[in-house]
Length: 133
Image (cartoon, rainbow, N blue to C red):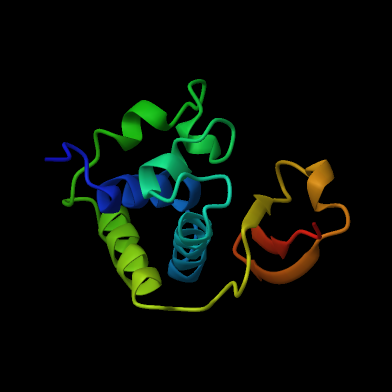
């Protein structure tokens, strides 16, 4: 028996990454997590192996200020319920950030890997991109 199901880890990661974003931003983050998982891109093919991979999702980093709080939330919080809905929508096949395996918050960072990336969508504070490989 898995003690922490992949769906719960995905929802927590969406909460960490997009708590203050509109529902569309939460869905797009969930899409990226699921797409990385499906393609085994920076992943072992599980949601756990995707969101917990070192330095991939900032909310899971050991120094993330929101990390501990995000594991204490429950479904009495409207933002958590929105993350649950976003995760379910992404699993059902929503396409708000088609083909994207990366995103970043341009208000906080301009990562060097995004310099030549194709911008697919800007939703809330996140820019969703396709990186040329």
